[in-house]
Amino acid sequence: MPLVDELLENLEFILWFCSLDMASGFWVVPMTDRTRLISAFITPFGLFEWLRMPFGLRNAPQIYQRLIDNALYGFLKLTKKDPRLDVFKHVVPECEERKSVLGRRLYIDDILVGPSSWDDLCIKVENLLTACDQWNLSISVEKSSWGDTPLLRHFNPELEPVIIVYASEWAVSAVLTQQHDNVYMPVKFTSRTLKPNELRYDIVEKEVLALLRILTSCFTMLAGRRVRVLTRHTTLAWLFRKNNPHGRMSQWAALLSPWELQIERSTRGEE
Image 1: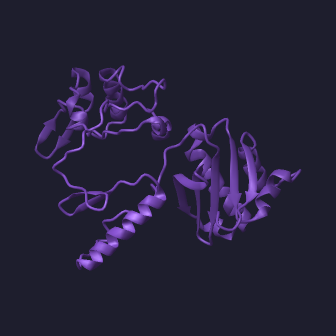
Image 2: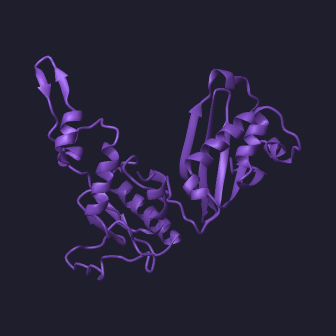
Image 3: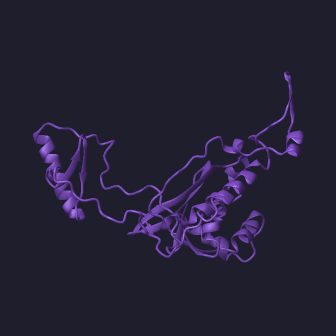
């Protein structure tokens, strides 16, 4: 079974996405005579055998995954020769019947602003809001996008991975980010609540738990790479400089030893 993280590694180079949900799931796989006998079950109404592969069998996901891989062989891997290849070869021509108002294209209650630059966008939006105010028109803020950026970005192997760790009294969390246009864009979030014995840990030990969790979750993306770690406390780097760690510190140091980590204290605005 492939890991989800492995399937998400190359999505940074794909422009268009299509999600298909298979109908009936495992029920499309017929059962053999032998598997019908060993998977039979008893109910108050009698003895029954499965004719189709049911949900709940231990090896059902692997069998179904192999079936899909064989059926879609040749379509699962995309070449990286032209990662930004677009299926739309021609630009849709402008329709002369659709009139442009203040440089925008309108359709019923939707308004599309197509500027050439950020300054042009600000000028056009300001003119649009002025016109709406004159005609006593209101705009739904909840349904509008005001120059916002995507919440999550796909992992780009060409950019440096940056991990930001957080720790509180009862939980730890970490986020894998990458810098796009001098902005840290999140790639993946991980968090968990602390166990009763972990509540007594100090802040450094809690940050180590958060770091270990994100490294394990994003192993396929971060293995063999140099990772920069941002933390609120400089004492996390002390774990790597200590000569003879004892107890759980020695175990954590052994788990982190294969990684090439650069521990830095986050500055104001990076937290």
